[in-house]
Length: 459
Ligand code: UDX
Image 1: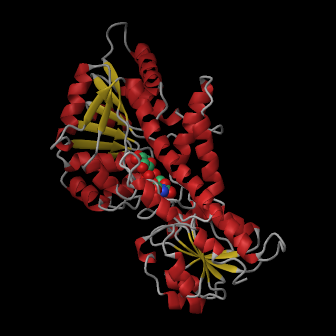
Image 2: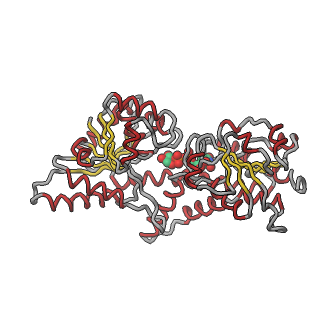
Image 3: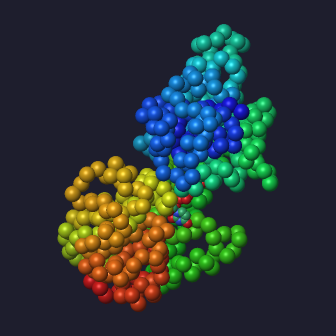
């Protein structure tokens, strides 16, 4: 089938490449000429495991096209996918200007029937707005009854960064929101290569499909904030959240996934989508108490590591206690296997350290360039080439992201390199008792042992 994608970001590029890889003919349109030129040269704008080879192969075999020519894109695909960004507005609601601009562009150039598919994460009611936008432009181009027909479908994306290609190749569900049986047929044909073994396609009305995406992300964010709240309680009552996690995860109604406590969730989806649904609900006169609490707990959790640092170094007694100190920071991206820094906990931590006059020596396996771009050049941030070099001359180690190669570090080297044998671990990577035996002051999330065990020591 011939398909056009507008917006070659995470979702657009990955989905387009995976569809081309399954044999479809896919045209990718973006307004960023530089991005398009680079993609043609095999330079991929994001780090995503497995993406480069499928982009290169399918571009070389002519199944994947890259262009800034929107008119070409409109005439190319019978299915027109909108996958542009929906950045948060000042009040947290999703800004639809890019989505509606694409709708306008499609309507300006279409000469035959089109199925327009919302792939971007858009609030409930967006399909109606996209329809109205297309209708309005078509009315200016054609006499009444002469315009080509169109149908708008909601087809939310559930891929995770870091495993986006495999998530797309092996989706656990394909949600299609439509009121047209013709559109449903075409969508079923498009996704047939991914709908093997058991039925994954779930067809529903458009508004339910739009809400499904938000409900999924908000549910996952709720699990994380709930667990972080439990972790904070565990710490205070003298319990260990890792035991509690095992204890509750074994109940299949709860499950083991997305109950890992930590220094808060980040990324391009959870923070933005929770806020956007709060706004949608507010806009229709419903105050979402749960979602507001999910957001508030996450905000507090992102400050957790700095709270431990304050406590350890006695910042409340001496506001200059960490002035001039250097913190080695391992892990900058919002989670492992991505270079994405959006809403990363590391940014909140670094801001707090800098405000208190401390310096940061940071290392991340993939997000160094992105950190440089986001933070710019500053005297209190040095990006180091290895996790070991980040330790040199530092006063303490902080871990914000659980990259695999941080799991078995050379603890002897850490001890030798740091002036204080203290580790602040936002991802519970090590066992508190073992760390104590090794002579570290070890702070992690929700494990009373790590905090109680350190009381009064190592200052
Ligand atoms: C998320 C959804 O998982 C995906 O289905 C949706 O399409 C987009 O949003 P993503 O943002 O790529 O995907 O990352 P995800 O793996 O879900 O992690 C989000 C954040 O939650 C990360 O900061 C991660 O560290 C944190 N997290 C995750 C926890 O703190 N604890 C957990 O148990 C799981």
